Image (cartoon, rainbow, N blue to C red; front, side):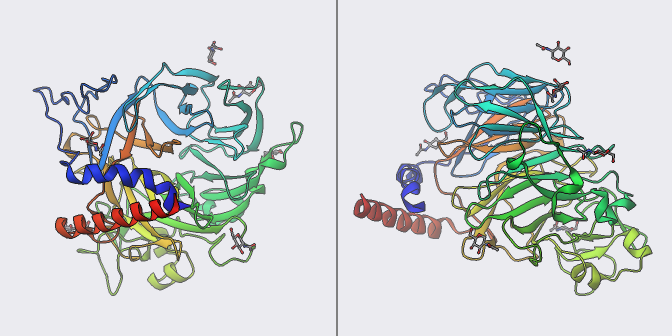
Length: 487
Ligand SMILES: *[C@@H]1O[C@H](CO)[C@@H](O)[C@H](O)[C@H]1NC(C)=O
Ligand SMILES: *[C@@H]1O[C@H](CO)[C@@H](O)[C@H](O)[C@H]1NC(C)=O
Ligand SMILES: *[C@@H]1O[C@H](CO)[C@@H](O)[C@H](O)[C@H]1NC(C)=O
Ligand SMILES: *[C@@H]1O[C@H](CO)[C@@H](O)[C@H](O)[C@H]1NC(C)=O
Ligand SMILES: *[C@@H]1O[C@H](CO)[C@@H](O)[C@H](O)[C@H]1NC(C)=O
Ligand SMILES: *[C@@H]1O[C@H](CO)[C@@H](O)[C@H](O)[C@H]1NC(C)=O
């Protein structure tokens, strides 16, 4: 099945492998604006960014697909090919493709507002059958009947999850399971970094919970956030949540603290790590070892940079250590890794991962890194991918890897950030295997397409080009041969 679906892309990659790299940085004019970025004579879409354009990795191409939003966050495709966008503080829009000439050559129509609401600010999901649209405010999850053909919601909304208000982290990311239709996963961050209540599971702060919203009828009362099954707690702000289509595993990406000391030393510039965490499968039993644990916040944090780290001992990247509140409780480094759940992978401090979406066969997860605001040299401002091992369902890279996230679309001059850079947030795949991304600070939507092979390995950076080419040809020839046999 996976092989058959891979064939059209593999066939077109044959042409590309022999061609030049797709991703030379676009030229700049004297205002630093991209000149004719991604525009080409054969495509009627002439949209361009008004800042130094991001750069696609080898094998990828991208194009600006829609503009003019206030603060686009969560995005999702409906079954009729319409792109739904939560514009924070404005409502939900539907964007139709007016022209689709393949790869990234698309022309979108004017966004049509389908829900007028200043409350909605981030989360968006369609039920597995496509007939219910979920969107979140900081305190509630709302549901609407949804008709993809008409591109419209029913008149009335229902509240399906309530009581999540907080003053600080206000996004409530939504994941509608495909494995367990009717189950909605909701991520709620901390109230603030000194949130002592987060140490109490019943507070509902800094947690990911799952709700069987499919069983709610039109007249049923909403769930209280505290009614949900706990997939994890002690999660400071896990804004991205995904379900691996191969295994059903639930993964999240966590935004860790801005300020951190160890033994009184300020280590915040390169620590703590942002985290990739695992939460088991939705059908796991209540006692499953990977589900419902405490991931450490506000007591324990993961290491990113070990250079100059006070009292390093044998600690490695990705291991947890007590933060100031953990030090007050006299937690040891060891207990932060045994009594609390360390991340499966660590990412560079302050890069702010906001979404994670697996590809169709679960071999890669794509992650948006919104970018730092509290670091002298900005970092992040990229979309990256992480390789997964389909047999184990785990990331291919080692727990202490610092190179697991490989660039897909990145910012060439980080010193221009945040003002002169894209800031990716929401991700969604369309039915043609294209990856779409919102950028909230610029009000834009991008479309990306992998039309060739990349150099990047999941765990070890670039491989030699010659070996890569040879391996590519071997894989392509095998795919073509298999395709002939199967046809
Ligand atoms: C892939 O995209 C790049 C950039 O748009 C283009 O130059 C190249 O021809 C494309 N390759 C194929 C195989 O379409
Ligand atoms: C949309 O909501 C705003 C704010 O609640 C309101 O002022 C406006 O009239 C609404 N627009 C429509 C078309 O309903
Ligand atoms: C849900 O419906 C109520 C009642 O009509 C309305 O006041 C509220 O604004 C709606 N909420 C959203 C997010 O549309
Ligand atoms: C929200 O919390 C209030 C106060 O604890 C409670 O009365 C109400 O029933 C809760 N709402 C839901 C939908 O559970
Ligand atoms: C959950 O589903 C997977 C297949 O999707 C199955 O292998 C596993 O046994 C199930 N677990 C339980 C506890 O039913
Ligand atoms: C850690 O910091 C050192 C010194 O600033 C730097 O050379 C190194 O690249 C950093 N490593 C990582 C993984 O960020």
